[in-house]
Image 1 (cartoon, one colour):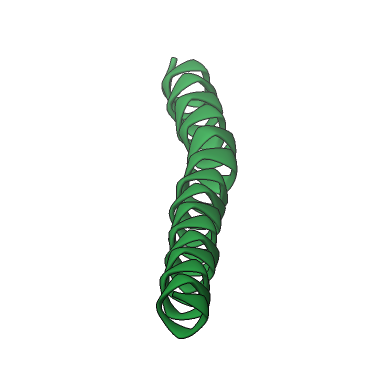
Image 2: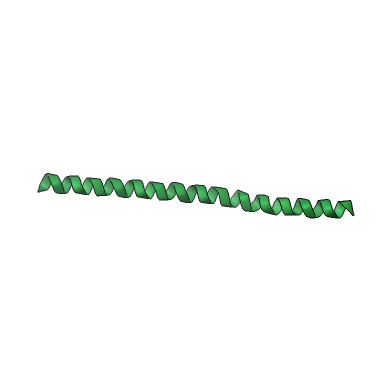
Length: 56
């Protein structure tokens, strides 16, 4: 009886670990990618405004 409970508990912990192993890097890289896109878009917008100002 104890073996069955331990096996079920360990299976549950293993499943949670697999979800965490996937979710945490996914969230991290999603946030990092979004920040990089925002940074590049900001640089592009600033460059465009500087060029427009210099050429006007």
